[in-house]
Image (cartoon, rainbow, N blue to C red; front, side, top):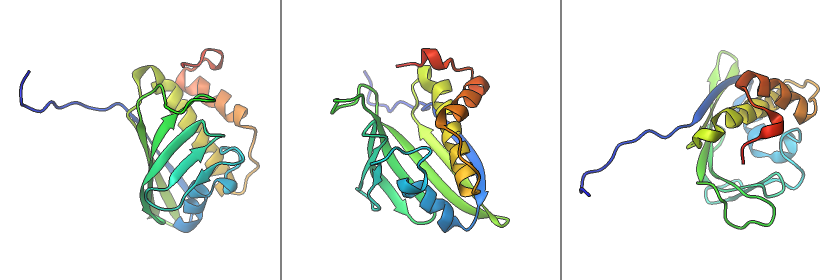
Length: 166
């Protein structure tokens, strides 16, 4: 054992997506679950403040808001729980959503880390699905059932939806 620090890299995913402006509109879709029903289930809540509770998809995802800077940056912890669990069997991770004006639109940068290696393709598929639903919602297009987006993204990331990692 040594007193020296250890350097390491945390695996994660990062996506970029252009959305229609202004940033306040994109911010509302990201932080008000009722505006994105194709992704968030009924009863999902985000308390709009640092330290606020995040409870998504019937409590499957729970966390705490770590950064709340409207309409620029929203970050929170990400804990995956099975029904009835109070403590996640997985390491806590962090989701950061950043918005920047760009040529009449808004550039969204989504970063999620760390991601366990066995979950990397599945995680990327999930975030691509989220972003596709967000993009259709923000552009006023018909939002398909979540499964339709997942099937398309599963093919892109080599995920077998019948054999999801647990």
